[in-house]
Image (tube, rainbow, N blue to C red; front, side, top):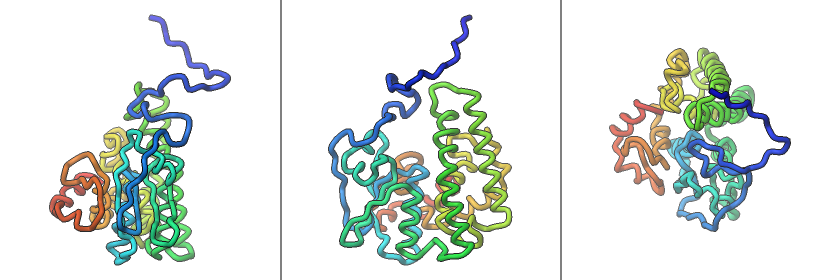
Length: 294
């Protein structure tokens, strides 16, 4: 049997074949719109264009938590953007030139403000409403440090481990081992922090928790990539405790349903345009879904 020759990178890389894997048809090395398509605009101050991936859940949980705190200005319309080419429509690219969800248009003032990147959306909303972000001192520094830790760490979990473990057209031992080691290191970082702190920034729940929970909470419950057993997630007891506590929050339960198009139908609310949209989803059903996965 002839062995496959080792890959040698060319002097200059060119895009001459698909990348393979589940998302090959939408991956490309250039930016910009591929077609004209305007975005819909609802009646609320906040217009969110998203999908309930871990990054999208950050934005909807944040908005629902703000509403739960009594900030009526956080009322929002959540429009579904499927990752099947819709993210390359001209209207969406105008809001997010990076063509990734979530993207927010804040229409509360005389001039609409676009905000893209999930971490930027969290900070924008926290500062706008004076909530879920400490005003100063060590608490604020901790909150922002853990928020940016997540933004820097998630690519290793998603585009690294998740891609090679779950989506790549072939299993590459080196790649899976490399990223599995890094993900377990990240889980250990979180577990050590949460051993002595109720939440990531300390005693109070903040945007740091909102950012980290959709990714690492899903991971330690065995939902994300189906990799729970592979990564021995049961060993991270403090992350498990923190994950379960956050999953019980009503704002989190509502937020994780918005723009969701998979799983139990009781867990899905494809678009959200009013608080009454949740009325068809009973609290009992929500609780059952949340107890099964974050």
